[in-house]
Amino acid sequence: MREFAVIAVIDDDVSIRVATDSFLRSRGYTVYAFESAEEFLRSPQLHETACVITDVRMPTMSGIELQTRVRASGRSVPFIFITAFPEKSVRLRAMKSGATCFLTKPFDGPTLMSCVETALRKGPDATSG
Image (cartoon, rainbow, N blue to C red; front, side, top):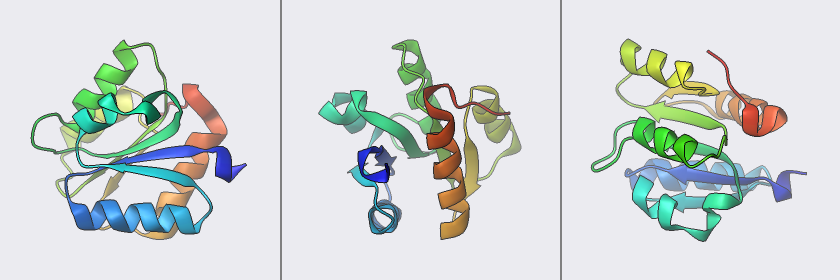
């Protein structure tokens, strides 16, 4: 089933983007990596994505703003947020908006896998908070 789960990884930090992509691919997932929220929104993978893993802070559109845009378009794909700046107010906002997980960089593989598996198990309506 994993080979059919498309995961989008969105982070302006190339090292995090590449490491997360490689880690998930090694676990059997189909992964598309994007440098920005805008790049993801313009991509053909937007409508086939089963889970979004995104940085909170990015230059032109934050991960939270991306989640809002995706939700406004009628899609309820699960979001996992990652950040180097774990602000409680941002975490609460993300979780209240339906984030599956909110991880602080650096995060470990087992924690990420747990979040991805939870998001995919719950599917498009995956929310917690």
